[in-house]
Image (cartoon, rainbow, N blue to C red; front, side):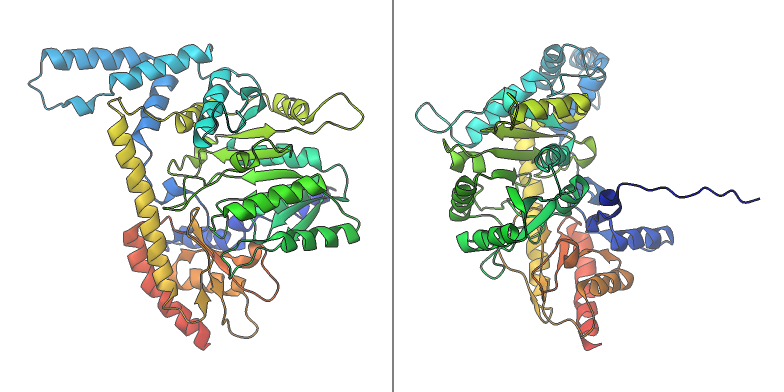
Length: 480
């Protein structure tokens, strides 16, 4: 006998949300993998899923703070080794004393260990370390720059949680809008849709390397006003996702001037700040200086060279919080309220965020190995990006503009057969070669253009295998 389960009316904003990086193409890839096909998942920035080895520094400290009994055990084992050195063990087989001591310091500073709730903002000593990191990164000194404040920093379960915190507060009704770059990481369109607000698109200049001037921002803003939208913030992703473009100083200053003139908050997604491959990263906080423009900056342990996506750690820093109309509160007070409702972010994520902003000192035994692992990861990422860029040059009608940054390339597909789209191309590419990418339309793109996003995370061996197959596929696809 069948049972009528009835039907349910749900939040239409969630029903209509789209998230292309986990959309139909990756879903089809998962089906093909179940069928035994070899699939290369280049659809998402998930480094360790594609073989990136975790940093020893992070994982050794995390293992010790999660199981503190290992600290004394490690010292006892090393003592036994020193008393009986004629074994197969080497000094490098033991966790160094500087990491044992650091783990003890973290546990002592936490006060309650890894299994307890922390302050809703996150552990204070970690927020203080983040503030120091920001000041060092931006060259803040007694005569220049504005110091970061630990009380304006929130530890989050990945940068995504920080985005939702900010967007959910900004969107008060359906006419409230947030400007986002097109193409954009679909987290932003999804967050705006979920909150019930209006997405206001602005279009960086692809052929100029995805930079933009004032006219681009003014055009988007004026069109929004004419449509009855009250614009409240502007999102900037630097380095870019999906484009990989690294924003120049003039574009950064232009955003700040534009935000100041129109009383907008800047949401600066800076999770790829380590992924500039010889380029220069300039934070919005540094360029902002003493300008009284509200700024929400985001960082994460998922990207850079850490790749700790699954541990869900990151932070949100708020500067120049606006006052809340009709109350005595400001924006940070309401961020506190949101964080309180969430209780706290993951404690392993908090500790890894601490280790991200507090790498080994130059005079510690761990430093040399840490630097070698970091340089190897970043160097290989750049090499793989160059391999894929070289393959694009052998594909008719494919152009890839801008500097290499973040973990992605966003080539323009200029000669697709009539009646086909970038979605059709990416799905066919998957079926033919096993390479899973994301269609450009999933990120938004200038009308009349077609793109795809590919993460340059697969190993060089995998790329050497799949790139010739991609070139052959491309030529055959264009031939119809």
